[in-house]
Image (cartoon, rainbow, N blue to C red):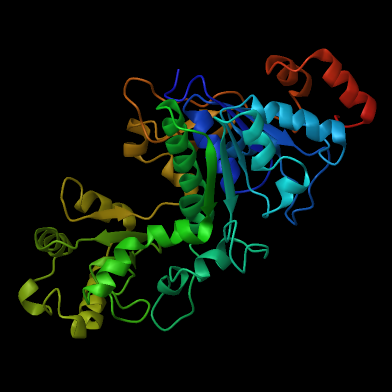
Length: 381
């Protein structure tokens, strides 16, 4: 029984951030019912294998043709029976389907209506297509990521889709649900990835205001510019990550590397960072990644191996905490964050689209006549 047990969430099928938010809610006990399409959406990506997609874990799926009146009516009946709905369509799509906030909140004033978009529900770009890289490009975040003298590097799609998108949507939905439980009314949560990604960068706006973030990309404290906050290649072609910012940690780093601080530039002498970086790089190159792991074991030098996705699950710390779990034939990240009294758990296997149509409609209180009408109209599989 997770912290969100007893809550019912309808998720309108999509890709990326909205399904990620739904996964987080399902991991912690919410009943998440995904309304899928009858046919693939033509999203321009290879056909997925739903059973291998962790974003679908713990959910159930109904498939409805929302272009048919019976399908849209059934979707509305499900949404108004829920505590929250989350959707990631372009602005106006849910309204055209008759499933926008007005009819939903009219029938269920306590409903939380979570909307996930790139540019938000208003503004001149509201109707424009885009992806993670486009959204973070407008925030200043993308410009800050990448090596000095080179072009910006997309940080996978972690900042826009998942950090600034899915997590913000999940937070917004849970916060609005808490407000409802305290006597408030249902409302719309407008989660724009541009604004979520910008919020993730709040600290850097502060650093810039203080004059501590004033160099070009790759020349600042946390962007690879600092010699003591970067990755370095080891003798076997692998890498270690160094994050020894504080003087006491930096001193341990130099001891571990066998470098004499009296022969090196001062740690915060930015003009001589290139020389200091060259000295650290030469020292790291003398040993293998495994050898450095042993050398820095038990120290506070802030040094860790750079692991692949495949290797991360086998790291002793991750194994000790069960940070990765084997579920439904797939090694995948465990639910997070952790709750000591009511821990999250990976529920049922990710369903094929429409796998639970008949049973879920019945469980959510729709009468058998609704399913019969849907079948008659060809609005269900």
